[in-house]
Length: 283
Image 1 (cartoon, rainbow, N blue to C red):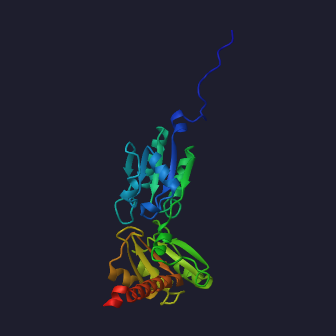
Image 2 (image 1 turned 120 degrees about the horizontal axis):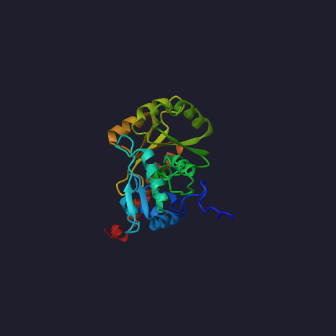
Image 3 (image 1 turned 90 degrees about the vertical axis):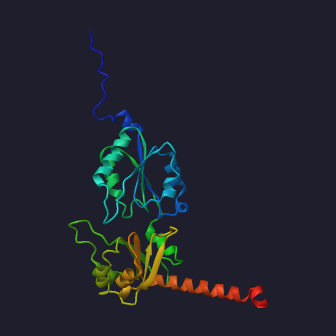
């Protein structure tokens, strides 16, 4: 008599729970909830578990389902942070439990958001991950001031660079970057650079003029956004005097001249409107 065919699951077949769970890395943008993409909003609304970064605003988290489980996994430079390995473990555990997991990250997941590391970790465990881009603060910050990052007359490209290297890493070669930015007419957008502003200023001055325009934008797009426009030679002094802090982006390049120009134009337009007002003429 023949034996019955075994029905055990192959070692290569993923568990049912793992097959039914899913994970999406969602860019929450710079903070203003109206800057969420439609796709990001839908993902947030449909999630059963959200792992939320520290820089994601409450107004964005409010779009989550009332039944969703929300876990705050804050990561801020210089502050107490949730270890990256623990975040990745939480993501994988929730997926294996069959949850619809959204990893909600400030800005864009793939621009200094460690999204690449999280995707690699999940894929190695057999989990397919979708990534939904968000507007990064480096773009939104200068845009909120009415200036572009590129301009045919002033900047042929833009470089996004971090001012904070991981332990043991030499970090950015600011001198080489300064020469490249000067020769290729590039705008530099520096994330996490406030604490190292003195060094960044000193190193960039080896290749860029001291009067190169600079903008520092803190809490881009949020109601409490602050900014300062200065020059490269006064970068660190301006940050200190104005009390600017993290999270901020520093934008270096001639395109920043558009901030002063747009402000001047707005003031001039307001003055013209005021002078032409019937009430003004009547007075």
